[in-house]
Length: 149
View 1 (tube, one colour):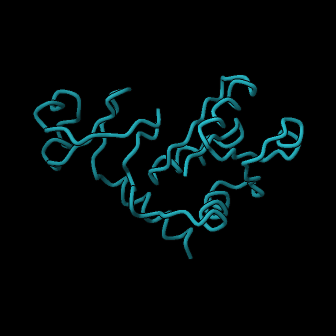
View 2 (view 1 turned 90 degrees about the vertical axis):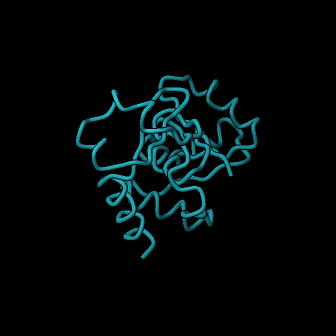
């Protein structure tokens, strides 16, 4: 399942990427350009029924909640999303699949304490963002567990 999120759903888009879902979020792109991504068999995520109706969008989900955690819970439950299989497989910034990299290749790009504490690293081949299983990972998992209750 792939998504395109409108400008109102940036945080939701980031979290869908964290879950491993290919999610286009381009807040500076005009709506007409954004809707072209629907040709890639994506689901349009929005909070606006008006946008759906005015643009005759067929494959969509209207997010009801204004609160992020409720939005994520709503989308996970109503679209029956798998929250485990591809977790942490995409860049939360640019949506590209991340790849494992040797510590030696990024040692100069990470904090010294991080280099001492972790051995497994991932990097986005497009934007260069580096990922590791630090305390932020535990916070993300905690949020997911809260949402699934």
